[in-house]
Image (tube, rainbow, N blue to C red; front, side):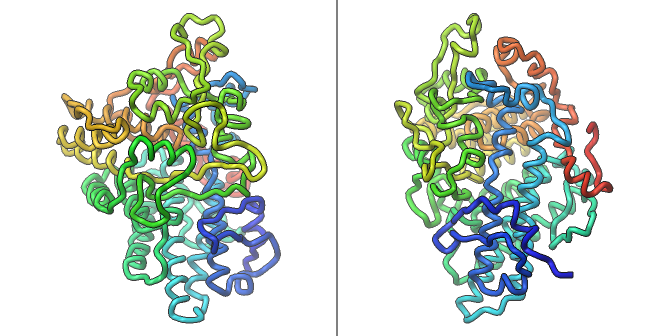
Length: 516
């Protein structure tokens, strides 16, 4: 039957994302059939761009920060999260699992059409054929990325081949279908097949190579490393992490690190680059409060006067504050914060201890942040993968091999870059201590980027932790007893998100996760 673009594109009608000037336009909603609407490489590029669009959802980063131990209730909180994520209340009808599921599957609907149409469109010349092949390779990488996201959030165990992940979207799925969820093994097979195919294409493709603002070769290799790490296949994870580490992408200096997050000011639009392997671009024309990254934690701008309804959790701040020369302390904690030296005894803890987050769009001093909510104002790109993650995967591989020195060396490479000078490498007395050290360093480095939920889920037991690390003042001190970490043990069913109620309503046969 004919497949119309109207139901495909309406969900992203209000978003326009560009990776370069050729990708500034997306299809508008309409009743155009695909064999009429998508007939040139330019059409294909615009359709792929709508897939990039949808993947800029901030919900995974915001949910992860509030549900775990990165964020807490802010002094301008109007009820956000207090009866939901902060106290671990999550249901099939909750916003977060719905938004994460839909953003990935809505993107996959477009991505799969790019892949299908790329094999049908007749190129106008040899150069056009190379461009179409490159666009298909980008789409294959994005398809792998979206499937890995679904697996990580909705599978009960990322290392269990038989556990259910999500619906395998390896083709165009019609609205008349009611597919079941498939296993992690099926997901991993598709992920690596797509990435291998994309890498083979990009290795010989003569079209301009994708930059770090597009799904590129190093991102594909990094996704293979990430996927193998999630699965616990550290032999293969190390091969691919090493490959990316040898690519020429360097860890940012402290000065560069500030610019990576505060102003998206990267040295070059070509690869290899500094720090960033892949990021999803947003433009000033896209600035809108419901979708800006920084507005996931504040109403206006990431400063004390910007109405922060979530702020940095006290336990995370205490770790950062213990080493003030670590640039991550300055990047995460806004200069407009109010820091109490006696916070445990404050009668008005919420008002007296204000730890403002400004990792996304912040500023070195004052309140005039780079990012703010206004027409044509700055809003940040989404850093999907950075080179520091490859060092941490390398460390996991060494810990898995009981090479504790090797694990410490990989972790220390990141630490030295963040301090701006060579640091003394940690000494791990056991494999458990090494896993704990890796998890702790990931907490600092990848905070507010959407990793913590998945990291605790897959590494918590290995690291010997019992649960989240929340300061008691962030639940008892705020009269939110349900936020006590004891209410979310590592064996809780809530470490796998529920299949959204909207999906169940449309497809009653789909399998729900245990506990929901």
